Length: 416
Image (cartoon, rainbow, N blue to C red; front, side):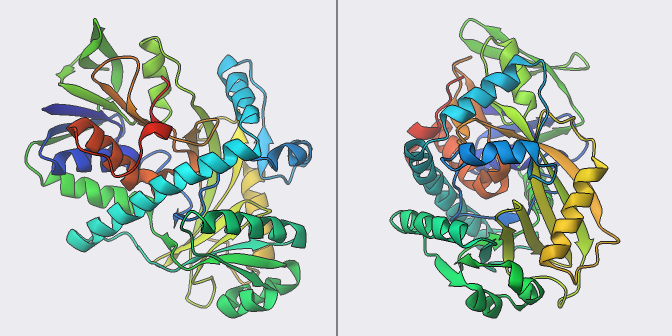
């Protein structure tokens, strides 16, 4: 069977890998010159397997007015004359309830644990060099009330298999001395020893290189997709911007936000909207930055040491222009980073911005599309793309190969 995978971000590459290792003939197509050129390029670097609660939660609605009116908020919203924006926002608000959030958390945990298992299997059998460390994660809180709320979330996730500890300020500093200068600002933290970090772009490139060495794999970079041609209930071919046709038995759409327009041309509506995120990458010395991955909860900022680089990623922008890097948002990230890590040298930091295609309920869509019998989707991972990539690729490949899936696929089956 010949499968054409569209998209060479971390989702598309892991999907192609899982299909190829099952013995399928694979063609991977992407308009960029290199893999991981878009949302996978400079993300936060955290492999946050035990903390996958969706953005849509019951605590969002009370804080939404403050976020929208505060220029220092982690959320910036720009209304557009775009029905897709308002449709997505309304669906997101409907998902902001405790019952939906709890069910989604449990479902995402099943996928994230599978992803961890698959990634560890890759590292055991064909180790990849991407600054991968199992260094744990701290989610730090500035206010006692939010720490108590986190304590309840820890209890919920304990029933789902998570092993986490709630630390007071003193135990937090003992665990991560690099945070000592910010001691007076912190109420405590949730520590998860099993969490990991790594460079998503390096991981994607390394796995891409392994694909290049496999038989029956064709890597077509710099090839933009113009359309998908359907005859009856099946896709016949992919047509490139140059007019070339690529035929296959099955097609996988893992092209992030570009998937939305390709599906729209087939008459179906993908529940995707871009959530813009920003990051800084800076050189670091061992004594400058935390050895443990850190999330500053109130600031919605993550810190991950990736080899000799510190990655700082933050913020959500809705309705913001694509790859433009807004100077005021980068300046805000730097000010807030210095609150937590006043010893960090931000002078040489490299700024980046990217669009994370997200679904309103926070769950990716993985499985057969309604648009065609031989079209499959692996889309909508939002800020959890790196964390969920290996599990998502394995889940989709098992469905396509007719194997019993490792987890229940029902929560992730596409509605488009």
